[in-house]
Length: 140
Figure (spheres, rainbow, N blue to C red):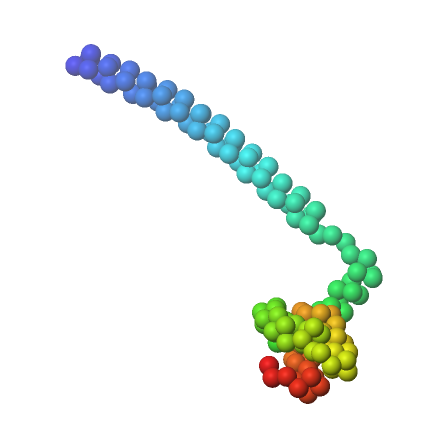
C-alpha cells in the first residue's frame, strides 16, 4: 500500500512539473502574440496619420466649389454612352465630300467641324443634328 501511495505522489508531482512547464511556454507565446498585436496597431495608426493630408486654403476652396457645382448627370451619361454612335452617324451624313454645290459644301464643312469639336457632347450633337437636317436638307 505504501508503494502505491508513493507512486501516486511521485506521479502527481511529475504532473505538476509538466503542467507548470507547459503554462510557462503558453505564457511566452501569449506575450509574443500580444507584442505583435501592439506592433500591428501601432503601424495602422501611423498609416492613418499619413493619410490625413493638411490642405491649404486654396485647395479647400476648390474642393468646396466642386462639391457645390451643378453637373448635368443626364448629359454626362448620354455623352459617355450614346455620343459615339451619334457622332459616327453625323460625321458620315454631314461630311463635306458628299455635297457638290459650293454653298451647301461650305455649310457642311462648318457643321462637320462643329461635330468634330463636340464629338463627346451628346446634347450639342443633337443640336447639330437638327441644324444639319434643316440647313443641308438631309434625313437622319
